[in-house]
Image (cartoon, rainbow, N blue to C red; front, side, top):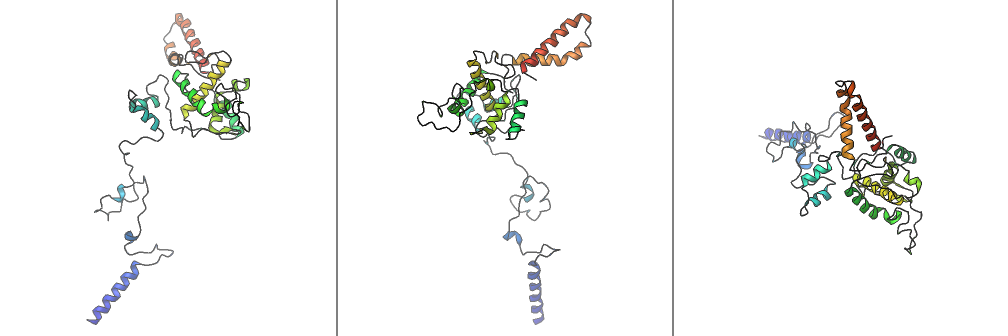
Length: 310
């Protein structure tokens, strides 16, 4: 009987010691019931890590199912789209589906997808060399000139820019105006009505909005991708007003490279489509059709000029 007790005690001791074996260079060691003392780490979106964890068959949720991506909660709003969804809730407003279709460019002739949270890639750094590169390369405004866009651009400009650059764009905002007895601004804001700013490309303005310039801070975290370009449109409208020219949805007599009026956008798109089909059609044309072909080519050249390509 004593031998049986001794054998039992030795067996228990061996089991306990083995269950708590320390780690060494060739072994991770062992621990008695580790799942009671330590949580098992979960790797999100990794499907195979827990494939062999079958010991939790009685659990409510299997470990191998936890990494699998699930559906968003009902009523969840994509990041950056809160304003659009709230607008859709207004009485008589567009539905959330219509708002998303508009932002995705699905319901417009020249529609483009608009990342409203401002996360569009921008491949220029915050250096003087990169500022000059952006000025040279960013020529076209991706949004046509529309009444709605100009109204949005005016509102944003007056909120974020006008206090320094002035509501007229003349560089005499309230912070530097004689009307403000406490004006102590350390540097004169840019006067957009000067020739150097009137002749500057759209890239000069967009880069300044993204990163700031001199004592001006950047606004990339305050206004979205589309909003930045609408502000640029409004600056052009102020310049056109000063020069007694037109920069509107109907016409752009300031500079065709600065923006395409909305009234011309559908016709430009149609001309480009016709021009793209022209080579295939030309194979079937006889000599009598040459004048018509030349007319199409002339129209295509005009459409390129309307875009301001260089």
